[in-house]
Each structure stands twice: as structure tokens, then as C-alpha cells.
Length: 134
Image 1 (cartoon, helix red, strand yellow):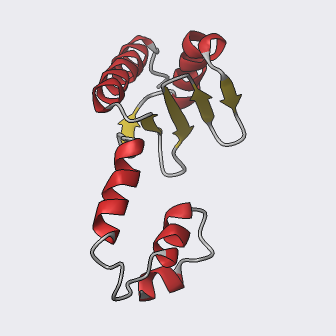
Image 2 (image 1 turned 135 degrees about the vertical axis):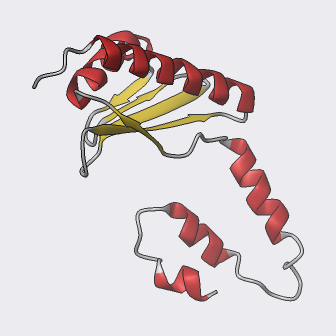
């Protein structure tokens, strides 16, 4: 598996996991099932880019709504909040006035979709209410 060999130093644990499951005659039929099972445990929205006028204000607004309800908060790289059954991370883009959002749940696709829609609505609402500086 050349791809895994090239990316063993990356931040993602996925490449390390894939490397540990390199094909061999006895287990190659199990690999796709194992990968699907792992992905299914934590449904994810993927990275969603949101163009906003004031990214910092939007992140502060999300913090004010959700931080007090979170089990864990990490602000080392954006805002990451973890709840009992779901979590989200929002951070500033380095390429322009936008934020990036990722939402995950613990095995519940409907919850992940619901929370993603909820967060996007709040982001959109806050973006519309932020005065544009000219």
C-alpha cells in the first residue's frame, strides 16, 4: 500500500490504521467491511466552508451558545466542543473571510445531519446580522 507508506507521518490516524490493515491473502475480504464499520461509528459532515463577513464574530457567537453545554472545549486551533453524543469544530480559514465547520456524532447519522443544519443556520443568521465594514 504505497499511499499509506507515503503518509505515515501525517496528523491523521487513518493512514496508520490503513497501513496496519495492508492486504494479505487471509484477511483482504474483511478490510472493506472494517473500514465501513469504522466510518459508520462516527458519521461526519466533512469539512464545510462558510463564507462569512466577520469570521471571529461568528466563532465567538457559537462559543457563547454552545460552550457552557459542552463536556470538553479546546480552543488551541479554532473552537472544538464535545458533547455526549456529538461534537463540532469550527476554525478560521487561512485563505479568506470564511470559517470551516466539521460536525461528528457517535453512530447517529440523523443527529449529525440535524446538528450540522442547526449550526449552519446559526452561522447564516449571525453572518446576516454582522454589519459589513467597508
